[in-house]
Amino acid sequence: MAGPLISLSPKAPAAEAVQAWLAYLTQERRASPRTVESYGAAGRRYVAFLQQHRGGGLTIADLAGIETAELRAWLAHLRQGEQPLSPRSLSQALSAVRGFHKYLDRRLGVANAAVSLVRGPRVKPGAPRPVTEDQARGLIAEPGLDPYLEGWEARRDAAVLTLLYGCGLRISEALSLRRADAPLGQGLRITGKGGKTRLVPVLPAVAEAVADYLSALPFVLGPNDPLFRARRGGPLSPRHVQATVQGLRGRLGLPDSATPHALRHSFATHLLGAGADLRSIQDLLGHASLSTTQRYTQVDAERLLSAYAKAHPHA
Image 1 (cartoon, rainbow, N blue to C red):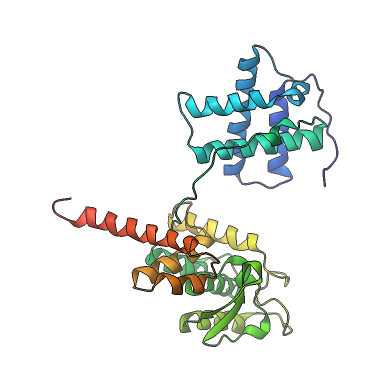
Image 2 (tube, one colour):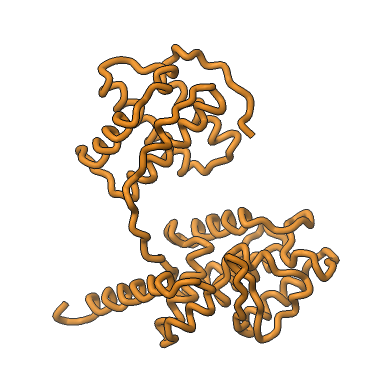
């Protein structure tokens, strides 16, 4: 839904619209402080460039008349300025400005069709950034040390993270499990993207983590009910899993790249490092294309070369 229009004068400085947008992101969208900071920087740089480019003050009403040539000039400025941005950062800045203009349209009634016509730079997909085996174990063990969690909730979080790392599941796949799927056997049939079904082997540690969670679960579930439950009994949300890992990596001192999806990456990378062939890993992950799985080869090669460079006496 677009939401109600807010009362900012069309003659007000464009910078006031940026502030209103950031307040919306914080208060209504519940965006993370990092996101608000990043979007705010992009929005302020955008408005500052337009003011300089046009040689004068910029009002909210003026934002409706920004042309594609000006948007391309702004991107060129970011690409060639004193602190040039990478293609990925340029793409993120353009995404932020598109979000700003969408807000202008829906909440201030200031529409601009030109923004959607400008394409950002092509961004080469980055290689996955897995966590180490020790870091994965730390993420899985840490919920049990949280004094603010009920015992069954800590076991639930540990079970979900164990599924991501031990079976290479996506968050949506782990949360799609039903009560009838447990106790887990030696294999688990998963329906992934595009309705593609695959059979994933289940390690004893994974089955034990899920059984441990179920033994403490305070709710009675029907066979078709979602297996993982929130504090009040409803289905667990993907956002909870993401927020949980965000909190855990802060306590463990892990980088921002330590995400739930990084556990899935680690599952593949550690199997590859142990000698598993790429085609088998493709089947386990449910990738439609082998080229997607091949990104893990690059990761493992980089890790091996890094270790070689540090250890070899002539490096």
